[in-house]
Amino acid sequence: MINRRQAIQLSAGMLGYPALGLGARAEPTTVRPLQLIERTIPSSKELLPVIGMGTSRTFDTAGDTESMSRLTQVMQAFFAGQGTVIDSSPMYGRAETRVGDVLRAMESRPPLFAATKVWSTGEKQGIAQMEESARRMDVRDFDLIAVHNLKDWKTQLETLKRWKEEGKVRYIGVTTSHGRDQEQILDVMRSEPLDFVQFSYNIEDRDAEKSLLPMAQERGIATMINRPYQRGTLFGKSRGHTLPKLATELDCSSWAQFFLKFIVGHPAVTCIIPATDKSHHMADNMQANFGRVPDAAQRAEMLKIFESM
Ligand SMILES: NC(=O)c1ccc[n+]([C@@H]2O[C@H](COP(=O)([O-])OP(=O)(O)OC[C@H]3O[C@@H](n4cnc5c(N)ncnc54)[C@H](OP(=O)(O)O)[C@@H]3O)[C@@H](O)[C@H]2O)c1
Image (cartoon, rainbow, N blue to C red; front, side, top):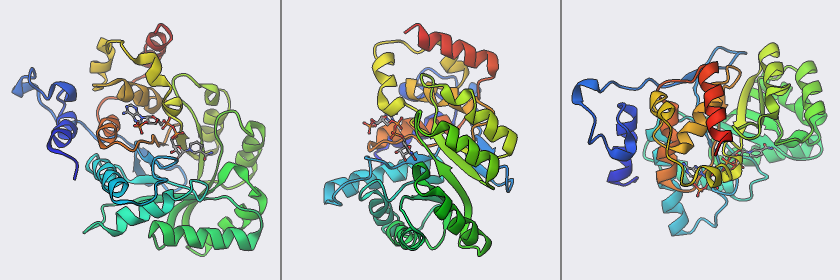
């Protein structure tokens, strides 16, 4: 269970109270529920909550009692914040298994959009890996499988297209991370019937604005954004700085929410997958799933604030 303080913090955020102050200064008359932010998957028009979760490193644990209890609390905070999208990969060590362990132990499973990747060479090996991922994550069929970092992408995408036709997976895609394979991934986006593309984008690393985000928008491909905190290094910059007034105007009560809302404000963004192994950080992240979204002028101001830190 997430503890009482975290539960109050999360629900306070959703009700429009400043979470860190637990609403002590808020006037009851000003309370209004914050709206869940959802984005449409272009290929199906299905709606997804904009904040999901990543599992790289954070869920790669031995499965001991301490880590299982910690990861259970992380997942509870995620579902409490109306998250549904969980992204993993066979490349993340034991992460898929730990996700499955936590899901299996839940009395009832909240709505889940299960995403993993195939990271293998050869058709048979790719299929065996995807079947193993389903067992590990305890899902019958994945909602999304993407080719991880374009590894053997032609072979794996052929299988995925066939699986989609056969109803074994709902969506297919490809992934990359900062700076890798940009030209190649753009070619794949131009030529293949992708539902999703995953890449890095955050307030510091904005390369994706040049080609990846516009191409996704043009081709009607949903985007899943990894490394939203630049692997955590953004917090080194914000440490010691007071949150600006603009943060409150965007229903943000932390720098984490400020960084996520900057990404949410890009119109080509479908879903963002920050990773944490701390339930209070998850509760914090999930507050960015609600409330106001910055427009272009506010995003420009956010950037100015960040660059002056
Ligand atoms: N090629 C690919 O397909 C690819 C590549 C990269 C990433 N990904 C996916 O994207 C996910 C996210 O990327 P990432 O894990 O590299 O980086 P990230 O989400 O940008 O940053 C994670 C770091 O942020 C910290 N953090 C999270 N929430 C916080 C909060 N509210 N306050 C303060 N610190 C916070 C975490 O520390 P704590 O644990 O201490 O909270 C962790 O150190 C991965 O888990 C993975 O699923 C995919």
